[in-house]
Image 1 (tube, helix red, strand yellow):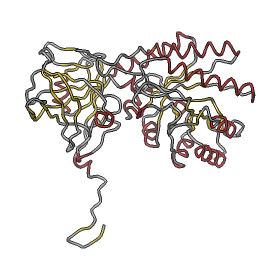
Image 2 (spheres, rainbow, N blue to C red):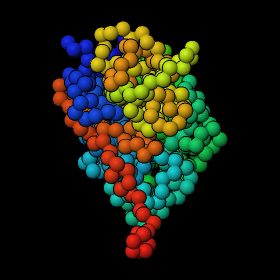
Image 3 (tube, rainbow, N blue to C red):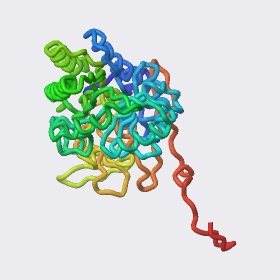
Image 4 (tube, rainbow, N blue to C red):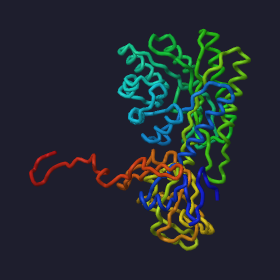
Length: 442
Protein backbone atom coordinates (compact mmCIF):
# COMPACT_ATOMS: atom_id res chain seq x y z
CA UNK A 1 0.00 0.00 0.00
CA UNK A 2 1.56 3.26 -1.14
CA UNK A 3 0.91 6.32 1.02
CA UNK A 4 1.48 9.88 -0.19
CA UNK A 5 2.93 12.94 1.51
CA UNK A 6 1.94 13.12 5.17
CA UNK A 7 -0.52 10.22 4.98
CA UNK A 8 -0.20 7.64 7.76
CA UNK A 9 -2.22 5.10 9.74
CA UNK A 10 -3.15 5.95 13.32
CA UNK A 11 -3.74 3.74 16.36
CA UNK A 12 -7.38 3.25 15.32
CA UNK A 13 -6.36 1.85 11.96
CA UNK A 14 -7.64 4.99 10.22
CA UNK A 15 -6.00 6.86 7.38
CA UNK A 16 -4.70 10.24 8.47
CA UNK A 17 -3.60 13.16 6.29
CA UNK A 18 -1.64 16.08 7.66
CA UNK A 19 -2.05 14.57 11.12
CA UNK A 20 -5.85 14.62 10.84
CA UNK A 21 -8.00 11.48 11.01
CA UNK A 22 -9.96 11.11 7.77
CA UNK A 23 -12.89 9.70 9.76
CA UNK A 24 -13.04 13.00 11.65
CA UNK A 25 -12.94 14.94 8.38
CA UNK A 26 -15.79 12.87 6.96
CA UNK A 27 -17.80 13.30 10.17
CA UNK A 28 -17.40 17.08 10.22
CA UNK A 29 -17.63 17.93 6.52
CA UNK A 30 -19.56 15.00 5.06
CA UNK A 31 -18.68 13.06 1.94
CA UNK A 32 -17.67 13.29 -0.82
CA UNK A 33 -14.92 15.62 0.32
CA UNK A 34 -11.57 16.35 -1.31
CA UNK A 35 -8.76 16.67 1.22
CA UNK A 36 -5.56 18.53 0.30
CA UNK A 37 -2.24 17.82 1.97
CA UNK A 38 -0.84 21.35 2.03
CA UNK A 39 2.54 20.26 3.38
CA UNK A 40 3.02 18.12 0.27
CA UNK A 41 2.10 21.06 -1.99
CA UNK A 42 4.67 23.24 -0.22
CA UNK A 43 7.35 20.55 -0.39
CA UNK A 44 6.89 20.08 -4.14
CA UNK A 45 6.96 23.83 -4.78
CA UNK A 46 10.19 24.19 -2.85
CA UNK A 47 11.77 21.19 -4.59
CA UNK A 48 11.30 22.84 -7.99
CA UNK A 49 12.59 26.21 -6.77
CA UNK A 50 15.55 24.73 -4.92
CA UNK A 51 16.77 22.77 -7.95
CA UNK A 52 16.92 25.94 -10.04
CA UNK A 53 18.67 27.75 -7.20
CA UNK A 54 21.33 25.06 -6.93
CA UNK A 55 21.86 25.18 -10.69
CA UNK A 56 22.40 28.92 -10.49
CA UNK A 57 19.70 29.64 -13.07
CA UNK A 58 17.14 32.42 -12.81
CA UNK A 59 13.70 30.89 -12.91
CA UNK A 60 10.01 31.28 -12.23
CA UNK A 61 7.96 28.33 -11.03
CA UNK A 62 4.35 29.07 -11.97
CA UNK A 63 1.46 27.05 -10.56
CA UNK A 64 -0.66 25.92 -13.52
CA UNK A 65 -3.87 26.56 -11.69
CA UNK A 66 -6.26 24.91 -14.14
CA UNK A 67 -5.38 21.76 -12.16
CA UNK A 68 -7.23 23.19 -9.16
CA UNK A 69 -8.34 26.79 -8.80
CA UNK A 70 -9.63 28.45 -5.65
CA UNK A 71 -8.89 31.50 -3.56
CA UNK A 72 -7.35 29.36 -0.83
CA UNK A 73 -4.94 27.42 -3.07
CA UNK A 74 -3.91 30.69 -4.72
CA UNK A 75 -3.12 32.05 -1.26
CA UNK A 76 -0.90 29.04 -0.55
CA UNK A 77 0.87 29.43 -3.91
CA UNK A 78 1.41 33.11 -3.13
CA UNK A 79 2.93 32.22 0.25
CA UNK A 80 5.37 29.88 -1.50
CA UNK A 81 6.52 32.60 -3.88
CA UNK A 82 5.15 30.91 -6.99
CA UNK A 83 4.00 32.65 -10.12
CA UNK A 84 0.51 31.77 -11.35
CA UNK A 85 -0.87 30.54 -14.67
CA UNK A 86 -4.49 31.31 -15.43
CA UNK A 87 -6.41 30.26 -18.54
CA UNK A 88 -9.65 32.22 -18.31
CA UNK A 89 -11.19 35.42 -17.06
CA UNK A 90 -12.69 33.40 -14.21
CA UNK A 91 -9.33 32.15 -13.02
CA UNK A 92 -7.87 35.63 -13.36
CA UNK A 93 -10.76 37.07 -11.34
CA UNK A 94 -10.19 34.46 -8.64
CA UNK A 95 -6.51 35.38 -8.54
CA UNK A 96 -7.33 39.05 -8.04
CA UNK A 97 -9.69 38.17 -5.19
CA UNK A 98 -6.86 36.15 -3.62
CA UNK A 99 -4.65 39.24 -3.76
CA UNK A 100 -2.17 37.60 -6.09
CA UNK A 101 0.73 39.86 -7.13
CA UNK A 102 -0.28 40.91 -10.62
CA UNK A 103 3.27 40.88 -11.95
CA UNK A 104 3.46 37.13 -11.25
CA UNK A 105 0.28 36.23 -13.18
CA UNK A 106 0.60 34.67 -16.66
CA UNK A 107 -2.48 34.41 -18.88
CA UNK A 108 -2.79 31.37 -21.17
CA UNK A 109 -5.54 30.14 -23.48
CA UNK A 110 -6.21 29.46 -27.15
CA UNK A 111 -9.36 31.58 -27.45
CA UNK A 112 -9.08 34.54 -25.10
CA UNK A 113 -11.94 36.97 -25.64
CA UNK A 114 -11.55 40.70 -26.09
CA UNK A 115 -13.11 41.19 -22.64
CA UNK A 116 -10.70 38.73 -21.01
CA UNK A 117 -7.68 40.39 -22.61
CA UNK A 118 -8.91 43.83 -21.63
CA UNK A 119 -9.32 42.55 -18.06
CA UNK A 120 -5.69 41.39 -18.14
CA UNK A 121 -4.59 44.87 -19.23
CA UNK A 122 -6.74 46.53 -16.57
CA UNK A 123 -5.07 44.40 -13.92
CA UNK A 124 -1.58 45.00 -15.41
CA UNK A 125 -0.68 41.32 -15.17
CA UNK A 126 2.85 40.08 -15.70
CA UNK A 127 2.55 38.30 -19.02
CA UNK A 128 0.14 37.15 -21.72
CA UNK A 129 1.06 33.94 -23.54
CA UNK A 130 -0.06 34.57 -27.14
CA UNK A 131 -1.57 31.55 -28.84
CA UNK A 132 -2.68 32.60 -32.34
CA UNK A 133 -2.78 35.37 -34.94
CA UNK A 134 -6.27 36.54 -33.96
CA UNK A 135 -4.99 37.16 -30.46
CA UNK A 136 -2.11 39.20 -31.82
CA UNK A 137 -4.62 41.52 -33.48
CA UNK A 138 -6.68 41.84 -30.28
CA UNK A 139 -3.66 42.60 -28.12
CA UNK A 140 -2.41 45.19 -30.58
CA UNK A 141 -5.83 46.85 -30.60
CA UNK A 142 -6.17 46.93 -26.82
CA UNK A 143 -2.60 48.06 -26.13
CA UNK A 144 -2.82 50.86 -28.70
CA UNK A 145 -6.20 52.02 -27.43
CA UNK A 146 -4.97 52.07 -23.83
CA UNK A 147 -1.43 53.17 -24.73
CA UNK A 148 -0.32 50.47 -22.30
CA UNK A 149 2.62 48.11 -22.55
CA UNK A 150 2.33 44.38 -22.04
CA UNK A 151 4.90 41.59 -21.77
CA UNK A 152 4.13 38.55 -23.90
CA UNK A 153 5.41 35.10 -24.72
CA UNK A 154 4.84 33.38 -28.06
CA UNK A 155 3.43 29.90 -27.59
CA UNK A 156 4.83 27.42 -30.08
CA UNK A 157 4.30 23.76 -30.93
CA UNK A 158 7.83 22.39 -31.22
CA UNK A 159 6.86 19.15 -32.94
CA UNK A 160 7.65 17.08 -29.85
CA UNK A 161 5.11 14.38 -29.06
CA UNK A 162 5.31 13.25 -25.45
CA UNK A 163 4.45 9.68 -24.48
CA UNK A 164 1.05 10.34 -22.95
CA UNK A 165 -2.67 10.13 -23.71
CA UNK A 166 -3.71 11.72 -27.01
CA UNK A 167 -6.17 14.02 -25.20
CA UNK A 168 -3.41 15.56 -23.12
CA UNK A 169 -0.60 15.94 -25.65
CA UNK A 170 -0.13 19.51 -26.79
CA UNK A 171 3.37 19.89 -28.22
CA UNK A 172 3.01 17.96 -31.46
CA UNK A 173 2.31 19.71 -34.77
CA UNK A 174 -1.37 18.72 -34.90
CA UNK A 175 -2.52 20.70 -31.85
CA UNK A 176 -5.07 23.41 -31.26
CA UNK A 177 -2.44 25.34 -29.28
CA UNK A 178 0.27 27.69 -30.42
CA UNK A 179 2.22 28.62 -33.54
CA UNK A 180 3.93 25.83 -35.46
CA UNK A 181 7.69 26.06 -35.13
CA UNK A 182 8.45 24.18 -38.36
CA UNK A 183 6.13 25.76 -40.95
CA UNK A 184 7.08 29.40 -40.38
CA UNK A 185 4.13 30.44 -38.19
CA UNK A 186 6.36 31.19 -35.22
CA UNK A 187 8.57 33.51 -37.27
CA UNK A 188 5.52 35.23 -38.72
CA UNK A 189 4.09 35.82 -35.24
CA UNK A 190 7.41 37.15 -33.99
CA UNK A 191 7.70 39.64 -36.86
CA UNK A 192 4.19 40.94 -36.12
CA UNK A 193 5.15 41.59 -32.51
CA UNK A 194 8.78 42.32 -31.85
CA UNK A 195 8.92 45.98 -32.91
CA UNK A 196 5.48 46.98 -31.65
CA UNK A 197 5.69 50.05 -29.36
CA UNK A 198 3.48 48.56 -26.66
CA UNK A 199 4.26 44.84 -26.87
CA UNK A 200 7.40 43.45 -25.28
CA UNK A 201 8.26 39.95 -26.47
CA UNK A 202 9.98 38.16 -23.60
CA UNK A 203 10.55 34.92 -25.46
CA UNK A 204 8.84 31.64 -26.26
CA UNK A 205 6.64 29.12 -24.51
CA UNK A 206 5.80 25.48 -25.14
CA UNK A 207 3.91 22.75 -23.34
CA UNK A 208 4.41 19.27 -24.72
CA UNK A 209 1.83 17.27 -22.74
CA UNK A 210 0.91 15.87 -19.34
CA UNK A 211 1.83 12.87 -17.21
CA UNK A 212 5.32 12.68 -18.73
CA UNK A 213 7.71 10.21 -17.06
CA UNK A 214 10.90 10.90 -19.00
CA UNK A 215 13.11 13.93 -19.61
CA UNK A 216 14.02 13.33 -23.25
CA UNK A 217 10.93 15.17 -24.56
CA UNK A 218 11.82 18.25 -22.55
CA UNK A 219 15.37 18.15 -23.89
CA UNK A 220 14.13 18.03 -27.48
CA UNK A 221 11.70 20.90 -26.82
CA UNK A 222 14.38 23.03 -25.18
CA UNK A 223 16.76 22.39 -28.08
CA UNK A 224 14.11 23.36 -30.63
CA UNK A 225 13.20 26.61 -28.90
CA UNK A 226 16.78 27.57 -28.12
CA UNK A 227 17.72 27.00 -31.77
CA UNK A 228 14.99 29.41 -32.87
CA UNK A 229 16.03 31.98 -30.27
CA UNK A 230 19.62 31.84 -31.50
CA UNK A 231 18.36 32.31 -35.07
CA UNK A 232 16.44 35.45 -34.05
CA UNK A 233 19.58 36.83 -32.46
CA UNK A 234 21.52 36.34 -35.68
CA UNK A 235 18.82 37.63 -38.02
CA UNK A 236 17.21 40.41 -35.98
CA UNK A 237 19.69 41.11 -33.17
CA UNK A 238 16.91 40.12 -30.77
CA UNK A 239 17.54 38.41 -27.43
CA UNK A 240 14.83 36.35 -25.75
CA UNK A 241 15.03 36.82 -22.01
CA UNK A 242 12.56 34.05 -21.10
CA UNK A 243 12.28 30.39 -22.11
CA UNK A 244 9.09 28.78 -20.80
CA UNK A 245 9.13 24.98 -21.08
CA UNK A 246 5.71 24.40 -19.55
CA UNK A 247 4.82 21.53 -17.27
CA UNK A 248 3.43 18.04 -17.62
CA UNK A 249 5.59 16.33 -14.99
CA UNK A 250 4.06 12.98 -14.11
CA UNK A 251 2.82 11.71 -10.75
CA UNK A 252 2.11 8.24 -9.36
CA UNK A 253 -1.56 7.33 -9.67
CA UNK A 254 -1.00 3.56 -9.60
CA UNK A 255 1.96 1.22 -9.18
CA UNK A 256 2.34 1.23 -12.97
CA UNK A 257 3.40 4.88 -12.88
CA UNK A 258 7.09 5.61 -12.34
CA UNK A 259 7.43 9.37 -11.86
CA UNK A 260 10.72 11.17 -11.59
CA UNK A 261 11.67 13.60 -8.89
CA UNK A 262 11.06 17.27 -9.82
CA UNK A 263 14.80 17.81 -9.84
CA UNK A 264 15.26 15.37 -12.74
CA UNK A 265 13.14 17.45 -15.12
CA UNK A 266 14.68 20.72 -14.01
CA UNK A 267 18.25 19.41 -14.28
CA UNK A 268 17.62 18.24 -17.86
CA UNK A 269 16.29 21.66 -18.81
CA UNK A 270 19.14 23.48 -17.10
CA UNK A 271 21.75 21.25 -18.72
CA UNK A 272 20.60 21.71 -22.32
CA UNK A 273 20.01 25.46 -21.93
CA UNK A 274 23.41 26.01 -20.33
CA UNK A 275 25.10 23.90 -23.00
CA UNK A 276 23.53 25.76 -25.91
CA UNK A 277 24.03 29.24 -24.46
CA UNK A 278 27.70 28.45 -23.84
CA UNK A 279 28.16 27.04 -27.33
CA UNK A 280 26.57 30.00 -29.11
CA UNK A 281 27.55 32.72 -26.63
CA UNK A 282 23.89 33.45 -25.96
CA UNK A 283 22.74 35.09 -22.72
CA UNK A 284 21.11 32.48 -20.46
CA UNK A 285 17.37 33.17 -20.44
CA UNK A 286 15.26 32.97 -17.33
CA UNK A 287 13.58 29.55 -17.37
CA UNK A 288 9.90 29.35 -16.52
CA UNK A 289 8.07 26.12 -15.78
CA UNK A 290 4.41 25.43 -15.06
CA UNK A 291 3.79 22.51 -12.71
CA UNK A 292 0.14 21.92 -11.93
CA UNK A 293 -0.67 18.24 -11.46
CA UNK A 294 2.77 17.63 -9.92
CA UNK A 295 1.97 20.19 -7.20
CA UNK A 296 -1.61 19.25 -6.33
CA UNK A 297 -2.30 15.85 -7.93
CA UNK A 298 -1.15 13.47 -5.21
CA UNK A 299 -1.75 16.11 -2.55
CA UNK A 300 -5.49 15.48 -3.01
CA UNK A 301 -7.49 12.56 -1.62
CA UNK A 302 -11.24 12.16 -2.10
CA UNK A 303 -13.24 10.54 0.70
CA UNK A 304 -16.49 8.75 -0.16
CA UNK A 305 -19.02 6.74 1.81
CA UNK A 306 -19.86 3.27 0.52
CA UNK A 307 -23.60 2.84 0.07
CA UNK A 308 -25.03 0.04 -2.06
CA UNK A 309 -23.58 -2.99 -3.83
CA UNK A 310 -24.36 -5.38 -6.64
CA UNK A 311 -22.84 -8.78 -7.36
CA UNK A 312 -22.75 -9.98 -10.97
CA UNK A 313 -21.93 -13.70 -10.47
CA UNK A 314 -18.72 -14.69 -12.19
CA UNK A 315 -18.14 -11.15 -13.44
CA UNK A 316 -17.64 -8.54 -10.73
CA UNK A 317 -18.85 -6.95 -7.52
CA UNK A 318 -19.91 -3.34 -7.69
CA UNK A 319 -19.80 -1.09 -4.66
CA UNK A 320 -21.35 2.33 -5.11
CA UNK A 321 -20.13 5.47 -3.38
CA UNK A 322 -21.82 8.82 -2.85
CA UNK A 323 -19.90 10.59 -5.60
CA UNK A 324 -18.63 9.63 -9.02
CA UNK A 325 -18.14 11.23 -12.41
CA UNK A 326 -19.72 14.43 -11.13
CA UNK A 327 -16.70 15.03 -8.88
CA UNK A 328 -14.12 13.07 -10.92
CA UNK A 329 -14.81 12.84 -14.65
CA UNK A 330 -11.31 11.62 -15.60
CA UNK A 331 -11.94 7.84 -15.51
CA UNK A 332 -15.00 8.22 -17.77
CA UNK A 333 -13.38 10.88 -19.96
CA UNK A 334 -10.11 9.17 -20.84
CA UNK A 335 -9.74 6.05 -18.76
CA UNK A 336 -7.68 7.55 -15.95
CA UNK A 337 -6.69 5.01 -13.31
CA UNK A 338 -6.67 5.44 -9.54
CA UNK A 339 -6.08 3.44 -6.39
CA UNK A 340 -8.28 3.38 -3.31
CA UNK A 341 -8.25 2.14 0.27
CA UNK A 342 -10.75 1.48 3.04
CA UNK A 343 -9.81 4.52 5.11
CA UNK A 344 -11.52 3.41 8.32
CA UNK A 345 -9.95 -0.09 8.25
CA UNK A 346 -6.45 0.44 6.90
CA UNK A 347 -4.82 -2.42 8.82
CA UNK A 348 -7.14 -5.08 7.46
CA UNK A 349 -6.10 -7.02 4.34
CA UNK A 350 -7.06 -5.17 1.19
CA UNK A 351 -7.71 -8.29 -0.85
CA UNK A 352 -11.34 -8.03 -1.95
CA UNK A 353 -11.56 -7.09 -5.62
CA UNK A 354 -14.40 -4.68 -6.45
CA UNK A 355 -15.41 -2.12 -9.02
CA UNK A 356 -16.03 1.25 -7.40
CA UNK A 357 -19.03 2.81 -9.10
CA UNK A 358 -20.40 6.30 -8.78
CA UNK A 359 -24.02 7.31 -8.24
CA UNK A 360 -24.55 9.12 -11.53
CA UNK A 361 -27.11 7.72 -13.95
CA UNK A 362 -24.49 6.53 -16.44
CA UNK A 363 -23.23 2.99 -17.00
CA UNK A 364 -19.77 4.44 -17.51
CA UNK A 365 -19.70 6.07 -14.09
CA UNK A 366 -17.02 3.84 -12.64
CA UNK A 367 -14.25 5.45 -10.63
CA UNK A 368 -12.02 2.37 -10.45
CA UNK A 369 -12.56 -0.75 -12.53
CA UNK A 370 -10.44 -2.98 -10.29
CA UNK A 371 -9.87 -1.89 -6.72
CA UNK A 372 -8.69 -3.99 -3.78
CA UNK A 373 -10.30 -3.07 -0.47
CA UNK A 374 -10.93 -4.54 2.95
CA UNK A 375 -14.04 -6.72 2.77
CA UNK A 376 -16.65 -4.00 2.08
CA UNK A 377 -19.17 -3.07 4.74
CA UNK A 378 -21.86 -0.52 4.01
CA UNK A 379 -20.88 2.79 5.54
CA UNK A 380 -17.14 2.25 4.98
CA UNK A 381 -15.05 5.31 4.26
CA UNK A 382 -13.39 4.87 0.87
CA UNK A 383 -10.38 7.05 0.06
CA UNK A 384 -9.32 7.53 -3.56
CA UNK A 385 -5.76 8.80 -3.86
CA UNK A 386 -4.29 11.43 -6.19
CA UNK A 387 -7.50 13.32 -6.95
CA UNK A 388 -6.04 16.78 -6.37
CA UNK A 389 -5.68 17.69 -10.06
CA UNK A 390 -8.58 18.03 -12.49
CA UNK A 391 -11.18 16.59 -10.12
CA UNK A 392 -12.80 19.63 -8.55
CA UNK A 393 -11.74 21.75 -11.54
CA UNK A 394 -13.71 19.50 -13.90
CA UNK A 395 -16.55 18.74 -11.49
CA UNK A 396 -20.12 19.25 -12.65
CA UNK A 397 -23.68 19.22 -11.39
CA UNK A 398 -24.63 16.29 -13.60
CA UNK A 399 -27.82 14.73 -12.22
CA UNK A 400 -28.00 17.93 -10.17
CA UNK A 401 -25.52 16.58 -7.68
CA UNK A 402 -23.91 19.25 -5.47
CA UNK A 403 -20.16 19.70 -5.82
CA UNK A 404 -18.16 18.35 -2.87
CA UNK A 405 -16.49 20.25 -0.08
CA UNK A 406 -12.75 20.90 -0.22
CA UNK A 407 -10.72 20.78 2.99
CA UNK A 408 -7.08 21.75 3.57
CA UNK A 409 -5.07 19.89 6.22
CA UNK A 410 -1.67 20.76 7.63
CA UNK A 411 0.13 20.17 10.91
CA UNK A 412 -2.81 18.49 12.59
CA UNK A 413 -5.28 21.20 11.63
CA UNK A 414 -8.06 21.24 9.06
CA UNK A 415 -9.83 24.12 7.36
CA UNK A 416 -12.67 24.38 4.88
CA UNK A 417 -11.40 25.82 1.58
CA UNK A 418 -14.58 25.38 -0.51
CA UNK A 419 -17.90 24.64 1.14
CA UNK A 420 -20.14 21.89 -0.13
CA UNK A 421 -22.79 23.06 -2.57
CA UNK A 422 -26.40 22.95 -1.44
CA UNK A 423 -29.52 22.28 -3.46
CA UNK A 424 -30.21 26.02 -3.27
CA UNK A 425 -26.82 26.64 -4.92
CA UNK A 426 -27.81 24.33 -7.76
CA UNK A 427 -31.00 26.23 -8.59
CA UNK A 428 -29.59 29.67 -7.83
CA UNK A 429 -29.29 30.62 -11.51
CA UNK A 430 -32.57 29.01 -12.60
CA UNK A 431 -35.31 31.36 -13.79
CA UNK A 432 -38.94 30.14 -13.79
CA UNK A 433 -40.74 30.74 -17.06
CA UNK A 434 -43.92 32.06 -15.45
CA UNK A 435 -45.86 32.58 -12.29
CA UNK A 436 -49.01 30.48 -12.73
CA UNK A 437 -51.15 32.38 -10.19
CA UNK A 438 -50.54 35.88 -11.52
CA UNK A 439 -49.98 34.95 -15.14
CA UNK A 440 -46.94 37.18 -15.06
CA UNK A 441 -44.10 36.17 -17.36
CA UNK A 442 -40.83 36.46 -15.52
